[in-house]
Length: 458
Image 1: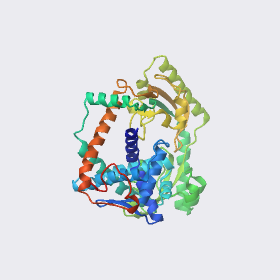
Image 2: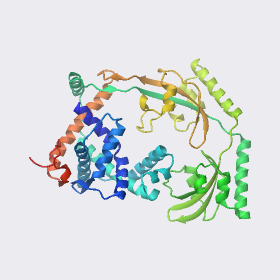
Image 3: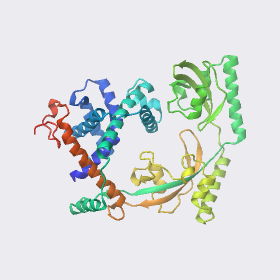
Image 4: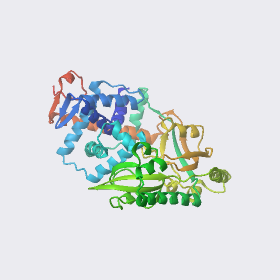
């Protein structure tokens, strides 16, 4: 089983390089770390090992247990790739780094609920401090990935190699269990506020703006009294400094960067509701802003009307009066899925499939019993920004938990066989590169029994 354990470890460790590197930075702020190893010009600290080890066990739900020595060797392998990527003049563009930093910040924000909570959780001074560290980490990640690709670019597997790989696992009783997976599609109907209610909110914000500008009222107090932003109680509507890269909604940033110092915007709409913005200061590329958010109310009659409309559409779908794809195109109001047949994309893998047991618990509860081609009940949902809607889920595809089968799971088995061959290619490459690379182990790790010749003893 060591082979499968190693493969799992590689998948897990690569997926958490970013998070744990950030965590190790926080650890360095608390204490001076011991140096576990130097590989080329790259350093692995004791805290890196501790944090990676902890995260691997959490991410594998305790199924992968690993020693400090095994964890160190995994980290040394990454540092070796990074070191030789620089030697091989592998280039990383600023656009590549910026794109990954933005995705990372979006991921962390989704995990913690707000960017302020992310900054606080990892002990950084502010968003710019966090982004600077993420940029450093992501640059190394890109170097590692490009060097791996360079080394394994020509590696491929033939159908015969796939068959031999599968039979080898079968003979050793090591065929993997593939978890239940589902492919889902949705139709979303938003419960919209009435024009009269929207007008009421805009007029209220316009009145507040006038009271601040003409009567000298306090923007901060007006925000505390009127804003529907849940964080307003602690900050009086002040969002601090933002840049064009800050993960705020596009419309908000466009208005913020169109203002002069001391100016208050006209009311404008985003997915969160209606806002007015006060621009406090312009600092280079950043803007210090406060805002007041007001969300139009949606009455029970509108909610009922939206639900009934989707219930009727579900009936038409089941009776074959309209296809699901036609219904999505004509009626769905979800911008992320409307133009791809309603397919829900897994935010963690960017693929259309979800592991059933790793889904959001609320969604799992709604689709767990569905078979292929069946529909969920019409159900109410609400975004973090307060948008209210009803949804209908279609189970497009479903495979239950099963032992790998060469015919039914050929593509997955092929991917495993290819990953194994690439792993062996990297191991062969590493064997040669270790000998020509400066490696200095800390005293605590000189007794480790590594798979590769890191100690250069032979």
